[in-house]
Image (tube, rainbow, N blue to C red; front, side, top):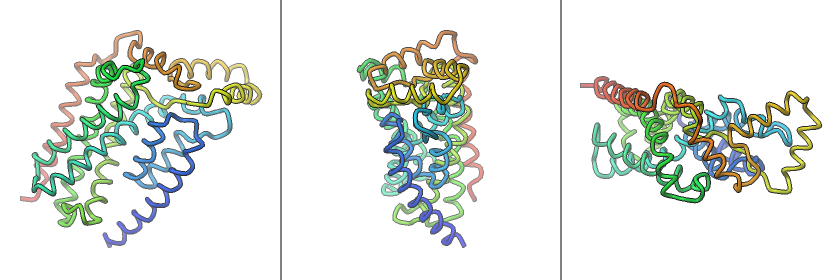
Length: 297
């Protein structure tokens, strides 16, 4: 039964991954988020493809800016960015843990360190340094807190899921087994769900970016003209507000402004950052405790 479920999962994942990898090339999204959706689909199969279509794929020419301005889509982009980047490090940590015979808390520590390191230094700071004026050091500083809080919630959901499944599927500890990749996919999917509320708070308080719109310079006027033809004056107001608040922009030249808005935010976040950081670590501790306590004796 389980073998059949996994076979179906991997077949659907391959089809979903092919669709997203081809289709997203024409979506006016930033390159790093395009890669993010490809990675998310590789992790979560048809779920990732569904989220791409529902949350990022431009419904009609010229409407991407308005389409992704919705708060839940902005949060989807933020969460996806976290899971995509951290997931690479987490999977590497899981493979290394298997190779070196690490299990339990030792495995969790390795996955956390590698997941956070890759997600923060590469997928967040390096790939998004243009949003910090081109400064990698400034990008590291501005993304540390948001990456930490999101990573804690991702691991809070992933750790108990993976440990519970590995305890019941013995072959899931071997990276050469399909069960291993199926279990890790389930863990990252649950982690995505648990991390979503934290990313909502981060986006709402301008501590993390969500979806963006990146168009070739020549396509901007065409897109705006199309939107003007299709929508009312009220829609124009919503479009302008969304473009300012959520970093929808025409080309990467305006990225520093988006970063300034994201970091400077205006009002102080509520609840305060230290409170949310404490809650994130409590959630992580609860997830690890559940995983340890639920292991068969």
